[in-house]
Image (cartoon, rainbow, N blue to C red):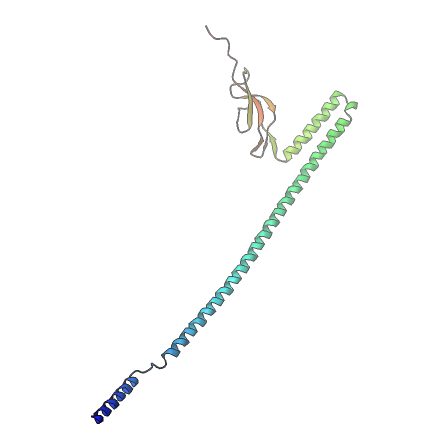
Length: 201
């Protein structure tokens, strides 16, 4: 019996050794997995670093472009303001010429006769109208023109034998247009047609 038990134990040891030899590569599996994981981590860290660098470059480029746009906007505003100021100076300079002539006319009105004073006032009116015309300002036609709500402001409707209904018969205040835009409508009286006679019996 003792000899059989010894043989059985020996056989079992032999079988276990054979099974161990029959499983190749099991001893090196864990180190290879760790190496692959380390490589993947290194790759991801490299990609993350590249993404961060690219994001930083994009942010810097955005800040530069925004600063350039802000500088461009300020430069355009400054150019526009300078142009407006220059145009104002030119217009006001010409207005001052009219004011000077008006001042001279008032200063010497006591030494001028009626005709001379009227001539001076007509000259001032002409000078002022020429100034306005040079700036693109035109007078709105009124008397004899059909009433136009875009350029006329009716203040009264009156009977008229001279003008048909709906036609301007009198101008109360001049109107002006700047190019095609109405700067100020003319205040006018509009014909209501001929005055009707007594009621027929």
